[in-house]
Image 1 (cartoon, one colour):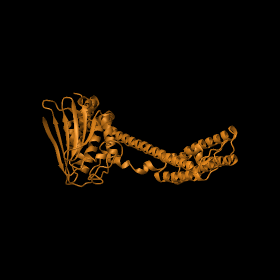
Image 2 (cartoon, one colour; image 1 turned 90 degrees about the vertical axis):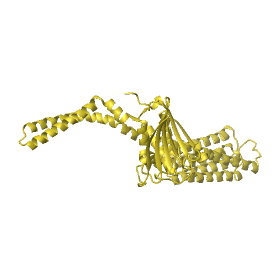
Image 3 (cartoon, helix red, strand yellow; image 1 turned 135 degrees about the vertical axis):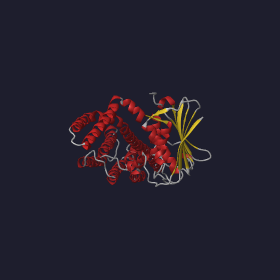
Image 4 (cartoon, one colour; image 1 turned 45 degrees about the horizontal axis):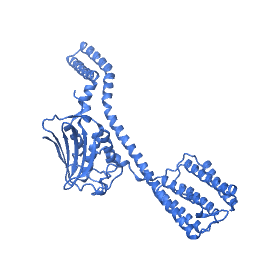
Length: 457
């Protein structure tokens, strides 16, 4: 095995060094971004019309279809009140507007009360359409913060239990003899379904919002890295544009040299001619071989350069030593790696987290053989908690034991790990997380060598 020690860095400087992209990604996450109201007036009005349409269908079916006795005029009046409130809501406010939390709670509470009154007139919990009371709670769970969900849920549960005790008989040709116990059981079942559906919808809504936020952050990180990669193209364009003014400067300098009245002026003119010619030669190289210049300067780097760039931002972290080693199989040529922003960002993120939780040392190891290239980040800290180890790489897994935040000012391992793992997998890497022996955390990425090796010049 051939081994090269790249760098050992012990901090003696300030903790306020450069921050990597993962800190920016972590900073974007705020529970309020997911929990704030997302209920638009259009959604509220549309779903309310659907509920009222179902209620109209119930009245038409029982009254005109089956002819069962019930206080239908009052039921129709209740539907009319709901329709009037809905028309007023649609006219008074733009349909695309997002409601405030308190406003949304009031609207959904009115819906709960309207449905409850309708059910009181048509059998209470003996009426199968008691499930309509679940709808406002499910809508709140999908679009509102938890406090609003609990408020609407409590009101709906209270209304369900109340109509189990106070309601007109269920309309039928021979009204069934459903005792209080049966109606109460039906109310409890409806409340249980309400809680289950609300919890399920809420969890799904939060996960969808988190994944959308994580995707936005990932795209922002990639866009920033791609702008850096575009500097090579900008250099080629600059070489083309600067050719004409440099030619003009050269001509004017030659005229100044021919007409110089003193040796000092001629010396200055000759210097201008020489420097302009040097600039033209540099621009000519950039213009004629932009691909080669890009490959040599930007598009490829050795494993040693790669690990150096990964650990360099953490060289001044206090109280921890960051060390990197490159090792390979005997007789196998060290590969040059394509400069992929995804790899640099992801591995820097893993090193940053290791520095936060390390007791005194972080070791970054790059290994290669004829078929594979791998990188490993190992620290001597407390390691990953067993209950989250299997979930690492998912968004917002943040419960690693140790200090809250750390030496880099970075808190948690949620979006950073998610983005880093996603980026590495896009480059063809297999990423694993595990605890080291006897302690510490180990993050590894392994690529087929052909996937990331730069082509031979």
